[in-house]
Length: 240
Image (cartoon, rainbow, N blue to C red):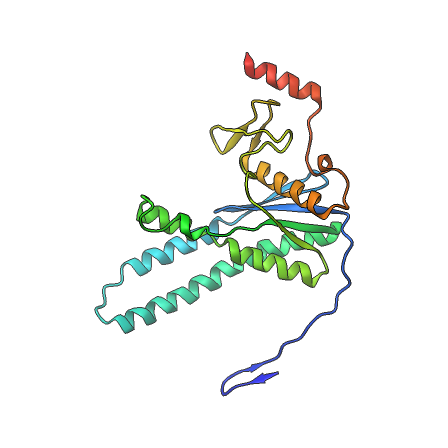
């Protein structure tokens, strides 16, 4: 317990029994959505475009400040910043709550990417426009991961992180490099598989987490593998 002049803070812990996972879910975080692939083959997408819209709105409001007093400008900017954080956190809270509840119901562990250095990709000097940098820097990947992790650990669910290299470009069926197509789709020239890039990334994250944990089945159980006949048929149709 900590008592200050205007605040009383009480910290408490929750003793939970660690869940022995029956499988895992892989989570791929994107700018406007989060894609979740489970070991049972199900895939879900949660819309986060409202968080992106809120950040764009407040970014536009702050860009129109014309006061000469820096102190007042900072106070006003801070006020709008707090409003923005509150609204964005509510969107992320709802999505993270649904993800953890689903994992708890199935007794699945959670696998996410260990993302570092994202902000360095979108800063001045990288030959990117101001609007594009602002939009990409509104990506709240760290806050969503923080919410998912603490909620999962509160329920006794294991949370592991994997390296993000190749999760969006490698085929989740055969592991070969895929080629981008229209509407965020990827095509694998090796097995003829066509898949949404977010779903493909979530399945690769799931497979990496399954291999790292080392107690849950085979890698193929973490993906929806097509029969060989179907893949061959898709490949022949692609060639024609």
